[in-house]
Amino acid sequence: MEDSELKPKYRYILDGISQIPSLPSIVSRILGIINNPRSSAEDVARYLEMDVGLSGKILRLANSSYYGIPGGITSIQRAVAQLGFNAVSSIVLSASVYNLFKNSENSQTMNRVTFWRHSIETALYCRVLAHLRREDLDPEVAFTQGMLHDLGALALDTAFSKEYAVLVDVARKTGAPLEKVEKDTFGLDHGQIGARMLERWGIPKEVYIPVLHHHNIKADTPYRNYCLVLALANSVSHAKGLVLYPQQIHLGLDVDATLVELGISSTSAELLMLFDEELSKAKLVMNLLRS
Image (cartoon, rainbow, N blue to C red):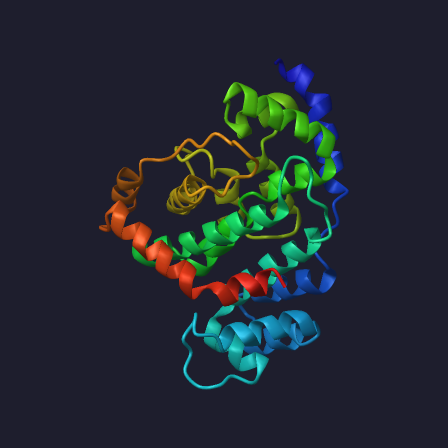
């Protein structure tokens, strides 16, 4: 398809996606405060306390066995200080995006429950991999990338449900990767759409660039290791059966080769055991994000 044919559709898709509501103003303000290097835990807590739902989630997370912080935490300020800004940002952004789409109905293309299970599972796997990598990756940033990596697919299915159903049917019948059929049809794939939405919301590059490239592990970017972590976590979750639509073709990565490239000494078998342990510990996190 020539570029001249893609441009009208390209604009049409971007216009349609722009109609999806943005994050609530209080959430945008909280994230802005968190991303300001001069902000303190007190500054973040002051705005979090304006949203009872989010502040409740932060307190429950801080007191959960998942983070293992000793002693009962009763104040938002202490919770922010103990969890760290990136963990707070992750839960605020992930929960807010879930709320943004939670009233959208299941389509004939995408089961929403399975979609969120896959997103949360991928996020948890990203967190494990970032911990194993240690050197240059923040586990909470990696968690956020995993949680939001398929945001573009959700947006496309919400804004263009009929067109997306046809597109997915083409992918299913031909066996072509979904992202290729998206790009051939719309001029953009779901990674590009998700990254554009996150950029529009003021989310930092370290989150949206890996979302952009999660199906292109050869991308030349300063965030390459985050991209590898996200691609591997996504691939393992799909291999375990959590796909965006029934009969989705799964093109898995070479897990051991990717671990070597990341400098992680665990074998694929050891990694899968760690992933299962993380899932068993993370039930509260999963419920928090979906409540």
